[in-house]
Length: 195
Image (cartoon, rainbow, N blue to C red; front, side, top):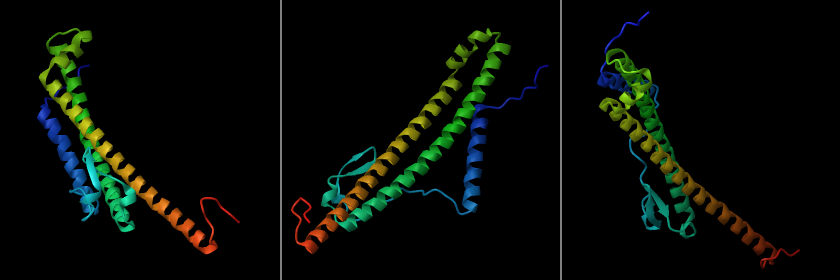
């Protein structure tokens, strides 16, 4: 028994998935959940501690030069930036997933078309599908979203590393302060613990 066929253009498929994503975003927003539109800004006065940027993430020259207040400001900035890039990566994952679904539907439709309409052998249909301009365009779109996912995840991981670096510096300072307090209270600490 043959299935009844309906014709849907590639653009209609893409528009359908875009509409679904918009409806999901609206549903979340109606419940007070939404993604930040803009990335967090580097705290005022902390620019002088940045040596360079790697993949869009400002890198600190030397955490030991920072005051405690600056450490807290920058740790908050990197934590917020990490959360922001995680949301961006999730958005790209949704777009990649939708594009992948469109690609699979298009691929299936083209296989049927080449086999039934063009009378191409079933073993050769995939070769014809890969040569189709629509399929190549959607493949390119899938690759683009995949790269966006990976780059935003890279930014997120760099921000998390910077947060850990700053928190480690905060812990190190706390240990130094407690050793200094011990030294001041007992009067003796010269690198070796004495009783």
